[in-house]
Image (tube, rainbow, N blue to C red):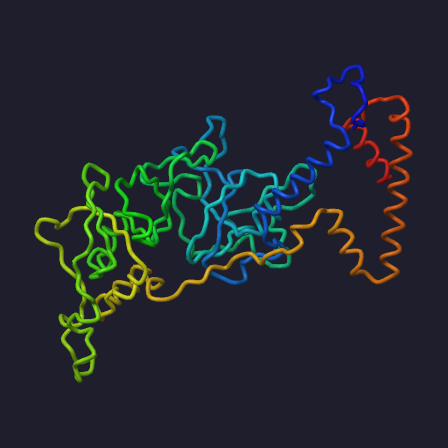
Length: 386
C-alpha cells in the first residue's frame, strides 16, 4: 500500500499499486453495495419456522447437478439431490460459494445442514460441514425435509426453454407463474396483456395439470391462446359475475349442503373448439375468490396441494438490519458504546496497542518507499498469533 504521491517500486507496476485513499474508497463502495443487496439480518435460520413461504437460495458449490444441468465439463463429482436454503444460511454458511438466488418459493423448509445440503467449509476456515446457525441441533445431518418440492430452478435453470439464468447476459423480462413459482421468459410466453391488466400469471403447464384452474369461471381472467408454442391471441373472459352463478347466490333459503353438487360447482366448461388446447391465463386482482370450492373441487384442491389458493399468503422476509447503512467504523463505535465501561476500556486499549504495533511495522516501508504487499500484511498478523 502506498500514498497517492508514491512512485512505483521495482517489480511493481503503477497499475498493481493500491493507495491508502483508493483502498478506503473501494471499501466504502463495497459497504454501500452490500447494504443494498444484503439489507436484512442474517443471524437466524428459518428452519424452526417449518415450511414457510420465503426467499430461497441454492449453492452450486455444495451440490452437484446431473449431467443435463452441468454448465462446466470439468464437473466430475457424482450428481447430488437439489437443495435450497434460507437467506441467512446463504451468507453465514455459504460465503464464498457459488450461490444463486431462487426468489420466493412456497412451503419450503431450509435444507442447510440436512442430509441434502452439508456446507463445504472454506479452506482454512476450520468450520465443520454443518449449518453454522443450527450447530446445537442434534441429528440434523440425518434430517430430510420431506415436504419440500424441487425443480430445475435449484440448478439455476428456468422457463420451459430450460435455460441457465445468467443475469449478466439476460436482456428480456421474466414472469413468475403464481402456482408453480417457475419463471418464464416473456419471449417464450408470447403475446402479453398490458401490465395494468393482470397481477398474476398462470402457465399452460399448471393449467393442463390442474383442472380446477383450467375451468375457473372468472371475469378476472384473460386467456392466452397458444399457437405454435407461444401465446398468439388474447381473449378476455366472458364469464358473468360469479356471485350470481347457481349455487353461489344468497337468494335461496335452502342450506348449501343440501343443494345438488351440480348446482354447487362453479366450473366453466371448454367449448368444443377449445377442448384440450393449451393456453396461459393472466389474472386480475380478486381472481382467487372465483375458485370453485364445491365438495368435488375441494377434494381436488386438497389432493393437488393447492390449498394456498384459498388463503392469504405471508412471506417470511429477513428482518431489516438498520446497521447496514453504517460503515464498519461507525458500527464498531456504536458497539463500543453498548459495552460496560471495563470491557470498553479493555477493547479500546487492545485496539490502540494493535494500531501502534502496525504503525511501527509499516514505518520502514514508508521510509524506503517500498510497496506493502498482501504477504507483508499477512506476515504481520501471523506474528500477532504467536
